Length: 479
Ligand code: 4AD
Ligand code: MG
Image 1: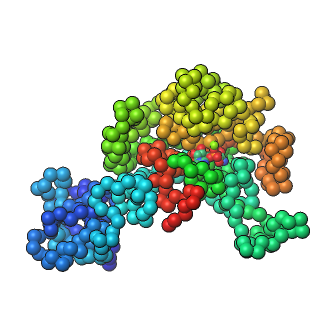
Image 2: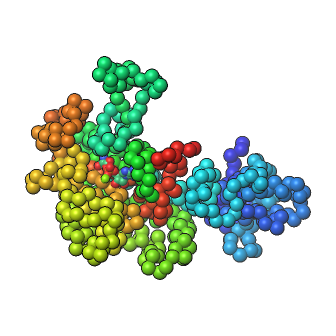
Image 3: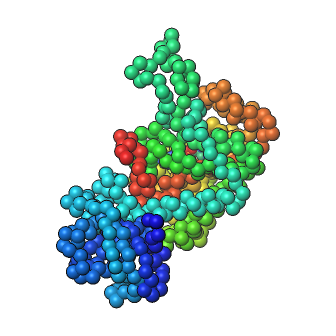
């Protein structure tokens, strides 16, 4: 049997007592022909392996290169050296896979994140990405745990869809039509009758509409899957393929929705703080090192871990859109014309610089903004009695801006039909969505949390491309 190895993360918690074990992993460093720092991905900490000096020939020693894969048998002993409680005294070393040091692009030194993006197939082997992806895993697990413990049903909504849930037209087409010879109708339009689904289809931008169907049968459901947007935004917060968590709850109004969202965000942060201490401490130090060369006023006021603790201990600020615009208008920032996009007043779609001003400069904590103008929001949001606003809410956090978008849904058939007409959304495509309003309609609400933005917030990574394994962005689909 090959798999009788001890995981290094577990081994490092043992009391050394000459236990005989097998470990496997990849070489991080090899010093003095004697000391191997071995990493198996379970933790950022390496296991120190000590070889008997002179036991292995120089040819063999050369092969113990950075990232070579090793199988090592040995005994666990107390370490006389500083920096570790225990070490492994090797009795045998087997090279499972060589790694040519002349060609291997990662060396035990600091590489830029930009360079590492170009070798994303290898970047998991660095401390930074090891920590980021272990935290990403923990957050995903915590999300399922949170909803499962609350009795929510995990619903798998389709990836291929014939509708545009957000009505924003940022769709990736799905087709099997021959691109070099597209069948056309007499009027010149594409003849989708000849396509695989006999209609026009796209990758989904959101699982919300289908989740609403589930919520009006199961009560509380959530989706957690990939979503796709062909928006040409080359920013540090946008991906063309990102993961979204979308709970949808029957018998919830906007306030219930905001309460759930706040509880949810705090829960998963708390989970990471409790379960990923070592990785978070590493990333906290990393950020501090990175900010050392910045002038004092550009550095973060709080460390990463302090920021997370702070969010856990304070209530999110809750304001209306109208109040938010007032604050922006009255801000010194605006008066000194420091915004790139001017604050034009009520009705404006806030830019991320405005959102970040509110959370980072004004409130200095997460903010929930509710009741947006209907013109800048999707068709499905519940219309308020003022005729101008909808029962929407966005959650903004420091460093990121918008992390959650949600709303109470329009459950009144006539109001929904009227809004769809106004926005030129064909009823015939969404007959099933409207049916829910015909048969036992109820007040219901939901929201979407952008998973990568959440991972960014918890890890402190400034670019969203560094929190997803293989980012898809305009002009980039490598790996
Ligand atoms: O605000 P959005 O577009 O809302 C929806 O899709 C709703 N259907 C959600 C719902 O009510 N069920 O997107 C929700 C969140 C945003 O707040 C943001 O965090 C993230 O998804 N997001 C993106 N993340 C990365 N790259 C992109 N291009 C994103 N677009 C949205
Ligand atoms: Mg949004």
